[in-house]
Length: 411
Image 1 (cartoon, rainbow, N blue to C red):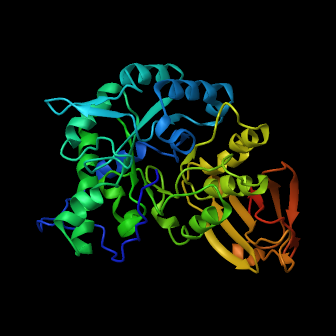
Image 2 (tube, rainbow, N blue to C red; image 1 turned 135 degrees about the vertical axis):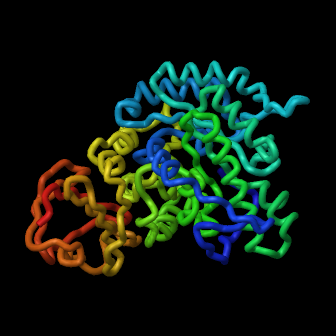
Image 3 (cartoon, rainbow, N blue to C red; image 1 turned 90 degrees about the vertical axis):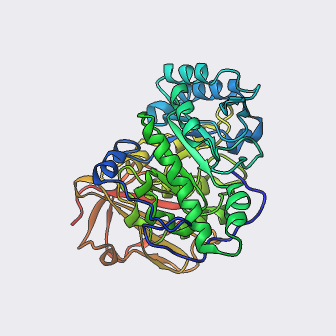
């Protein structure tokens, strides 16, 4: 979701438990509650979100058609389950404070029933502020009421976008006090988290607050299943690579039920090359990131469908161990990342992040830096071919392309 102003990341990093402005500590949920959260989003959520393609024009029919397309394209069979409505579905509140949908969405319960009838799940969008990013009704002061409403409709996923909470609450109540502003933000996300849990319905809770205040340190403790680690992604290589680079050092915060979110997929959007689409999808899978497509499903090109439905790559994403890839090393314009998989297997990503057709200097793979001893037998997940890896072997990759490997039995 795009916001109108460019907002810097918070400069202050806080501990996991942060006191709200009143001075009373935000209580940590009991251990059982934290364990229970892993039952929701036990693996990174997979689905589709309306914003990248429809933006504010999305309608009930668009969501129904998208659900149909997810099935017809084979995406559901590949694991894409959530059909998420982003901003602009909201109408007005009545005298009792109950939020109604606008004319684009005449019956949200009926829409949820339709999506569920396809074996899919429905997601929705709101903000802790008085308004959403697009200026529609937010949840401020109506958190419990809205959570119960979502549950009554049959909603399965909530994206909660900070937006107007910044000027309306953070800057208004705590001007020039970054620490107090961050405490207000944490309390707002905690409030909706408690409201969702009180409904008794399993609803994926997605924090969209741009990675402020080292959100990965405290989000799991207040019910967050995923949280944005950066600002918004764009359908161009530099944006994708910048966001990828900001994931270094975050692997320890990801696991079943709680995931770092580098934002939605841009696969099939903009003018990304086939190599860039392939690398983008591969690295989001390596990062154990949510895989939320945002492309034009009816007009999806066969090569884009092939990328989005690659079973071998999705298996990396959905590996039940839930380990996020770690940056290992780089040489010249080539980076190497690795991810531990269930059963002792390992995934390795070798990426040419440079702009040259091939890396300026020949890249030679150093197995020792990956903790591997001697030659290894691997599978190239994009070609399906088996290959042997030897120490110091040369690897040549086109610009922004990737060699994605799975080693079933590392030595």
